[in-house]
Each structure stands twice: as structure tokens, then as C-alpha cells.
Amino acid sequence: MEQNANITRIYNHAAEVIKTAILQGQYEAAKGVNRVQLLTNYAIGKYVSMNTRNGAWGTGALKVISERLRKLLPGLRGYGETQLKEMRLFYEGWSFIDTKSSVMTDDLPHDNSSVATDELQSADPVEDIMNLIKVAMPTNFPMEDFFNTPFTHHSTILRKCESNEERYYYMHRCVEEHMAVERLKVIIGNDDFKKGVIPNNFLNRLGDTSLARKAVMQFKDSYLLDFINVEEIGERDKEDIDERVVEKQIIHNIKKFIMEFGKDFAFVGNQYHLEIYSEEFFPDLLFFNRELNALVVVELKTGKFKSGYLAQLMTYLRILDDKVKKPHENPSIGIVLCKEANRSFVEYVMQDYDKPMGVATYTTFQETPEALKDALPDMDELKKLL
Image (cartoon, rainbow, N blue to C red; front, side, top):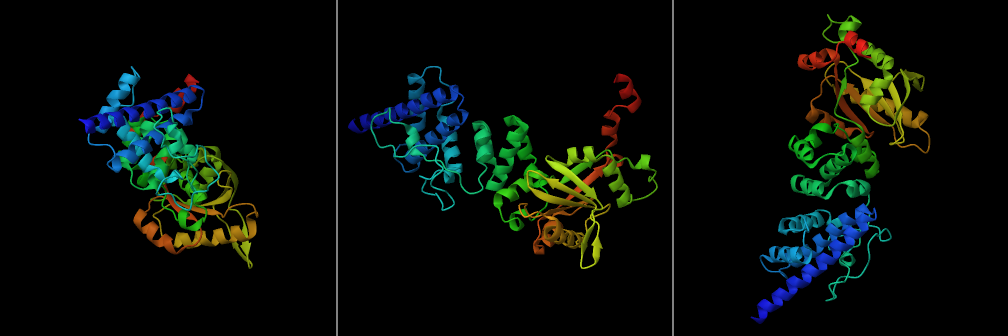
């Protein structure tokens, strides 16, 4: 009897603590501090984790506590038994950003906290549950994406993705595309992380993990260059169009190419002249990317990827870094843009190159599926409409 009364008291206290945290979080969120709501769930998740994982609360505790919460806060939604488990998952999945966590690492600085200090030990239910955590930014952690990803999206990502790199990728997609959670489930199910990330060696060759992650997100593994119409060029009888023809079409449509290629690119030139020890080289396309603060050289190939393309790219990158790159800029990045590539082979041969590079493929208008072509408006009709 006494034991049951003690358990009831513990669960009532837990409900009061969580209620206080909920109200505080909602108050701060109402003032526009949206990240506070996310941190509230994170703190509640730790509180639940601490007491369920060590056996302090018995079986069925979360159900009892959630029912008590509904009585304390009539009309409250989002804090049932299932949601409390999701908060526990949320905390445990990202526990390494909590400097008070037992899994904290040396990567965490000790002067970047946004939450308070002492452990929650008071029996007073008004005690701030936020004192349980002290959030800091681990080295190279995408904190802005973390705070701008909705809680329901976090739950989906944590349940369906194993590696942090994969989780970072989908968080970034959520933020960039303002993605609905159902859409998120679809792209994770389609394995967009592996399909959408360009084969590269950025993490090993750029040194700065944050920069490497930005580079990974900057490039796609495949591009649709639908402005290149081989039939209009008069190359319809050729199995493969000449690389210079592709280059000329890109230069003629450089704005369209940059819009497809990605954000923050500035065109430097084509057939850019490089010279070293009286040897001359002419990379196909040279860009500067403001986000990466780096030169990006693109080498065009009209056929299947060959390992020799990387050696060619390596030469360009070494000369660019030695002769063209400014002291404040990051290492130059090379991209081979070809018609076809075996991803596993690319990643295998890329291991021995010490300059950052990636290999992407492209599709032209001629290769666009007929069903899609038929859906495109006729140019004469479009002109009439305009």
C-alpha cells in the first residue's frame, strides 16, 4: 500500500515537472522563440530517458504520467504516451549536443550554452526542467538545420536513418524544401541520401568537416541539361555528341546551367588557360562558389566515366591551388560531368587522389523520356500564350 502511494507520488511529481516545462516552452514559443519549443521537448526527453532507462519508473509509467498530464492541462495535445517516447528518442538520438550528457565528447566547447546549469534534484515541481540540459554546438554540427527542422520530422529521421551524415542530409532537405513529413518519409524510403549525393572524397580531402558537408550538399549526382537539344544542333546521327558541342551549348545557356547546377555559383570562364612549367591546360568550365568560397572546375565528358578523368582533374586542381586560388579561399574542387558512371567504381578509384573531387552524370533533352517531352508545351503555342 505504502509502495503504491510512493509510486503515485513519483508519477504525480513527474507530471507536474513536465507540465511546468510544457507551459514555459509554450510561453516562450508564443513570443517567437520557436527553438525553445524544440529544446523543451529535448529536455523532457532527457527527463524521461533518465527515469525510464535506469528503472526509476516502473512499467507503464509513461501511460500514467500522460493521463495525469491530460488532467492537469485539459485539451493538451501532443504529450501522450507515444509522444513522450518520441521525446525520449529525440533526446537519445541527439544526446551528444548536451554537455551534461554522459556521452558528451571533447568536440563540445564549454562556452556556447543556450540553456542553464544545475541538475534537477528539487522536489519542487516548479523547478525548471531546462536545468537538466546544457546544449552546445559540437564541432561541425548543423545547428541551424537542427533548430529549423520540426519535431515530427526529427522523429522520422531518427527512426529511419542510422548514420549522422544521413540524418544531417535529410534535416537540410527539410529546411531547404519546407518539406511535409509525409514527403520526408517518401524520400527516405527512396534512399535519396545515397542516390542524391554525388560520389566524392570531400570528407577526406577538404579537412574542414563543415566545409565538406556544405560541398556534399552543394552538388547533385545527376543533372538534367534539357537545354541541350542534340537534334537542333544537327548531331542526330552521332552516337555521342562532341564535348565541345556540349560546352558551347552550356556557355550559350550559362544562366540555365547555373540554375540547374546549384546556388551561389559565379561563372569565371570556359577553356580557362592554365600554365605550369611551359605546359598549357584548358579546363572546360571554371566557376567560383560563394558558399564554399572555392573555385570549382567542371570537366565535361560525353561518354562513360573513365578513371583517367580523375588524373586529368587532379592536374587542374593542383595548378589552380598553386597559381589561381587566393590565400583566403578554400581548396579548389573538381567535378567530372559525364553521361554515365558506375558509382562503386568511382568511389573505389577516387580513394588515392588527394584533391577534393566528385563525379556526376547529366541527361540532355534528346534523352528526356517521350512522355515528359509530350507534356512540355509547344514553343509556338507558348509564345501565343505569352
